[in-house]
View 1 (spheres, rainbow, N blue to C red):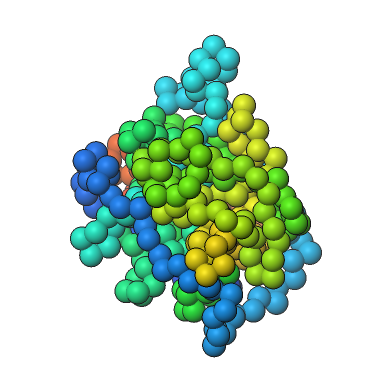
View 2: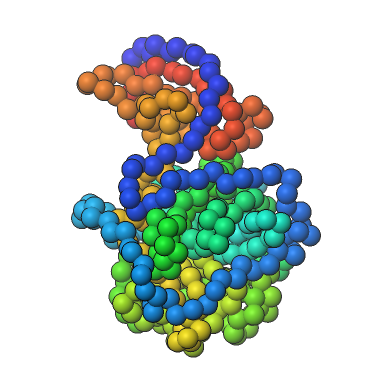
Length: 380
């Protein structure tokens, strides 16, 4: 079939947009200075500390309810095994050090001259560049603002960045319940990684955790994180080493809890995983470490709402051009304009960055676009 290709160059600022949903804050582009972080500054960053109180005793909090039908959402997603090492070689037994996934890493952020750390994970999505952590690692409630200079170092350990270095964060989003109420039952958020290596997303180089909703009570669980001052065994507890706890969680009214477990500062956002496989270093995330309740001496982790969780994933691949209401869908590194009135043709926008393709569209820099009109059957 003949293709009519029209090249039209324009410059636009790309911003991420999500379907209107009362469950989420508006996605935010954090302030970022690519020269901010040095190895010394990263080592001196402090594990993020939050106020430890009995959250379940709090009163006067108005929870924003979501009435969206959840029947169409999947109940679980399997993990995604690492496919490539940093040299884009296929990960196999010939180089064992590259087989295990590094989906979990150290998250760095800054606010008002202070530097902090949390734990974050890459999760398995079609986009491949979505991560999850605690909401308080993205949004600073006391200043009512998002953290700045957020970067993610997958595989960080022993005070050294992982093999992929530091991945900047393009966008962050948290639940409205946390944004407006500081409601720790919704202490989780997601981020979009600014990563594209030869057309491959981050999960191909790190692997990605699967996820599961409402696994029940007494769930055999593995928690990973970078704790400082916690009580984890066989762990330096210095905030610079990835450490592990294994046991069972209890399903309470508003949280998953573990009695007598203080994971430590810096482990905030660390994944609670079921079906963990030490050979691949992957499992299914069903919650994240949020806080330690000192009044009741127990770890607290939120219970995910599948509608909220899936809504962000569904919409994280939708973007639009500023000052243009036309909606596009990202697929295979192309933007697919939604056709109207039975139109058999579609418009694709292929991204070209100004810096020798070193960044992708989600870097939110000014970029050049090639607009190509083709038959959708040839590309979709």
